[in-house]
Length: 79
Image 1 (tube, rainbow, N blue to C red):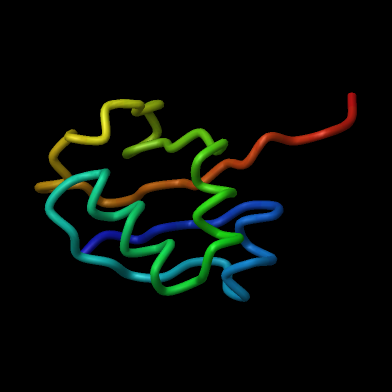
Image 2 (image 1 turned 135 degrees about the vertical axis):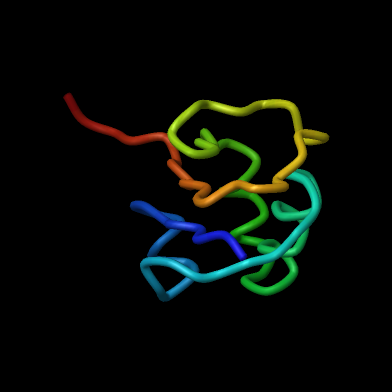
């Protein structure tokens, strides 16, 4: 199990700060989160940065075996 932490718009859409998930790869995780939290969350995930154990990951085929956490960071506004 890994901890998925949501920030900003992702947190608002999920309705929780974090959840535990078990998925084999990043693409499967993104799809499962979208199914659970709806189309709006799927759209948020499409534009979000995903940090896997603190490192930005863009390869959706990346294995999540042994991963402790994934952070969902939507684009932030402001300066």
